Structure formats: C-alpha cells, structure tokens
Amino acid sequence: MRIVLLGPPGSGKGTQAKLLTGELNVPHISTGELLRAAVAAGTEIGMQVKEIMASGQLVSDELILGMLEERLNQADAQAGFLLDGYPRNLAQAKALDSLLERLQIPVDEALEIAVDNEQIIQRIAKRAELEGRSDDTEEVIRRRLEIYTEQTAPVSDHYQQQGILSQVYGVGTVEEVFERIKGVLTLAAS
Ligand code: AMP
Image (cartoon, rainbow, N blue to C red; front, side, top):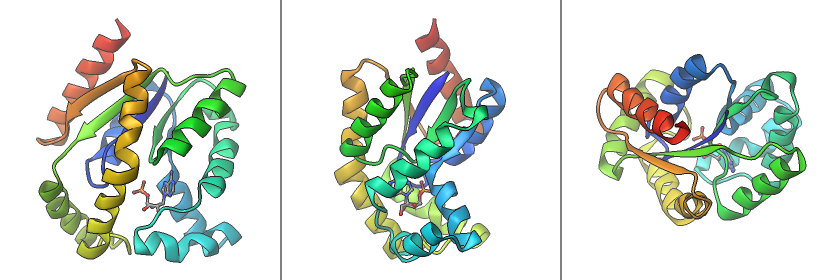
C-alpha cells in the first residue's frame, strides 16, 4: 500500500501517519523529519537547510527528491510506504510520478486531511510549547500556511485528476479523525 498524505502544517498528518503505519505495516516517511534529523546530525544537507526551514520556506525540489529517492530505495519501503510532507508543489508531484513509474510502484491513494487556518494556528501554538520547533512561531506558521495554499493545495487537484484522492475532515479527537481515515481508506480499497 503506497499512500501520500496531504494536509496543511498542523493538520495532524504526522500523528495520523504514526497511527496508520501501525495499522498498515508500512514505514512512515516524513520529508520534514528526514530534514530535521539531518539538521540535528549536522550533516552537509542539514547545514544547507537549517535557515530555510526555520524561516518556513520550502527547501529546493532537487535536494528533497534526492533524499526521498534514497529513502524509498531502502528495504523497508519495498512493501509500501506512507509519505508525509511530499509532494509540496506540482513539480514535486510530477517528479514523484516519474520516480515511482521508474521504480514501477505507483501511488495507490492520496489522502488529504482538511483543517481551517485559525484552528491550525491554535494547534501549532500548543505544539510549539511541547516540542519547541523553530518553525512553529505564529509568524512563520502564517507564512507556511500561505505557501501551502499557493503551492501545495494544487497537489490535491493533481491526485483528484488521477482519481485517487480521498478527503477527511481533520477537526475532532485524534481517534475520531483516525476512524474517518480508516473509513475512507477501506471504502477506497473495496
Ligand atoms: P514538515 O515537517 O513536513 O512540516 O516540514 C518542515 C519543513 O521542512 C518545511 O517547512 C520545509 O522547509 C521543509 N520540507 C519538508 N518537506 C519538504 C518538501 N517536500 N519540499 C520542500 N521543503 C520541505
């Protein structure tokens, strides 16, 4: 099962992805987490992206695609994966299509978690207290939401056109949202 998870920052994608990987037995691949690990480890890539990430901008398509390809080639991703944080724009969606076509493993489903902006800003203020991420300040979050609307929202249309997009409403308890997700994934699979 190869799933792409879409949704704005703070939509609960990461939390739901962790629950879903347990259910589906495929790895959760988060490009944001791969980058944060590179920053924490002080690798060359980490040093290149640190400032960009802290400002809420996207890192270059090329850099992220190379990193993703390397991760998708690892043994645990051969049976499937849950991709979180990629694609972030149409160019990345097309690059992913080409990459997966080359590897002969197309995306089965794209799942979008929809949450309105004010709700997100409140949630992220909480996450900032708990996790202390440098890109979780209100100003940076507003920028990340703008980028999402301008660049990432069109990615949903891309998957809609391929007939593999499902959408769920992301407001409610973690369990409620998870139940909705299982509902649409089961329906889509049947
Ligand atoms: P996330 O954890 O997915 O919210 O990502 C955190 C940050 O990492 C983003 O604001 C970007 O700076 C960077 N990032 C993660 N995934 C991508 C991507 N697919 N393309 C470009 N930048 C990304």
